[in-house]
Length: 376
Image (cartoon, rainbow, N blue to C red; front, side, top):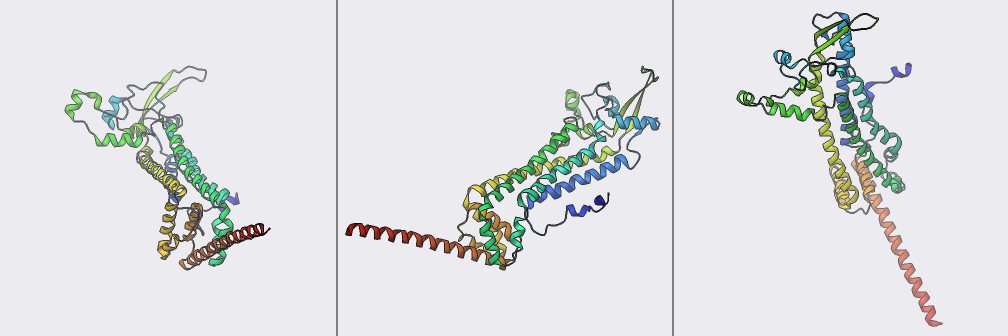
């Protein structure tokens, strides 16, 4: 139990000593995590701490608890129009089939908590399984010469490092899509199109003349359709020996759903935005992997604050090496980064001189052999 008391919420949002991801990654594992956390805290508090999550007119404590545990249904359309406006066009009457449509509100905070774990998972995989302190091993060298030496040793692994990072970026987007699917399954298949339906409902309002000529244009409010604040609850009571001798119907208020209507609309818009920019991020990363000039331009962008962008064009490195150098530039001072680049260029120049010398030596050996053969 003592181990759990040591866990601090601020540790989930603390800044890393070494920056080994990017802004898009942080939008997923920090901002997205925080947005979902807000929903978990508010919904859990409203559902289980205020004591009045559901209030049924004329009902006793048993009726309130029964309706809370077993769920409720939408009001009849005629009654709904007179109370809050039309919420469900697909329910002409309350029947045994559809009088438990709102059972999901009981599980919302727990399912959102699962989503919190899912959006953190790619970050844990990247940091614990793939990255494993690679960038820290560069930064802790402190001097440019030592960092360049360590970088050259890691050069064989930069391709794997780069590919693993891209995989985790893809996992970020997959995690959001999975959360979307989970919430859609819980909310009776109405969450995928929730934002679109709300936008369509408020962007087009049929006139009274149009409604008189075509009553089918009157659409239900998708917000109260999915999260009704006034619901119907049917309770069947009778003898313990069997049989339902007495049926009671109650009009109940789910005040929590007023928050849910707007929170899940915000969550839907946020997740759609996150998926969209994640797709753009993957296209950007694919270009960086496959087009050397794009990798060079990205490295120049990261070196521009130090005034070292001109050095990027002098480097003959593969895209994965430039990717790691760009990450390194986010963690060291400009003077150190300049030393690193100079050292890499110097070692690169020495390798070229050595290769040229070996080629010339081989040519000389061939000429000597040819002369000896001619003399013989």
